[in-house]
Amino acid sequence: MTPSTTSSVRPSLKVLLLRRLRMLILLASLLLAVGAGVYQFAPSWLVRGWVTWQVWQNHLQVRSIKVAGVRWVYYEGGQGPTLILLHGFGGSAMDWLPTAKYLVGNFHLLIPDLPGYGQSSPVPIAQGGIHGEAQALAGFVRALHVKHFGLVGHSMGGAIAGVYAAKHPDQVFGLALLDSAGLPFKLNAFARGVLAGKNPFAYTSRAEFRHLLTLVFLHPPQLPGRIEDVFVNRNRSRHAFMLGVLEQLRKPANATALVPLLPRLRMPVLGLWCRQDRVIPPDAMQALRRGLQQATQIDMTLLNGCGHMSIIEKPHETAQAITRFFILPGG
Image 1 (cartoon, helix red, strand yellow):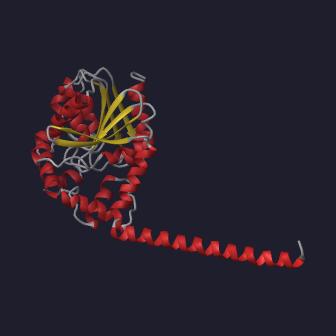
Image 2 (cartoon, rainbow, N blue to C red):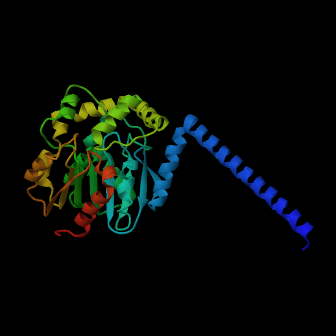
């Protein structure tokens, strides 16, 4: 190659590299612009995308089934003994995704949006309380032909799980109650507010949503404003339902719904609480332990460094406790 040829190649390479660099800058700018536009005008797409990614990463699939006119949407995945995981008041199956990541390797998981929540069908307020949801759960279980399973409930989901297990003891081989409702505890600021008619779960603004986060998390997540709006808008759409259900839950018979049923629970029972729970404090575990007169095994676990949402703040530790309980009975 002659010197003149070499000198002509070098500028050509420089021109090519500059062109590619400009294209990359243009592409990056375009992606940023699209991302900013989606964030500003369609933030729900970002939330759905994040959930879809978590579901795929956890080796779960989204399924649905219609039972007695109600469309249930649920996650399913994993191999092993079947566990049904129930979310709490105002939540959805999505709340379980951080913990499900550590359970799916050992269990066959069924994680439903309870009727009235998440993507499942809206239902009348009368069907949205503890006993209504427990009755609906029986239909869901029958429709899926699940004969024998472990039942895990968080918060209101714990009360639903306890009611179901008391009524169907032959189906449930183990019951795990996480920061569970339906038990008496020393009156705290949250309980006093609920008795006064306040419902922090029925938020309709960013400020109210942030207040709820500080209540249920020891370390509240910091979410961008438009992502907060997604949750606020979803909650507004079911505002009347949320107010009505909490009105049910604050009645004494529902607030302590598990107490008369605890002596009927014959299966192994796990109580798991966060020490810093400001919604349902861990002294509720005392009532749980006192009431379990026939349980073949009683495990009580306290976690540090989390508030009411153990399944999100301490997913690995929560999954470890659940796994030990169901795989190593008596261990």
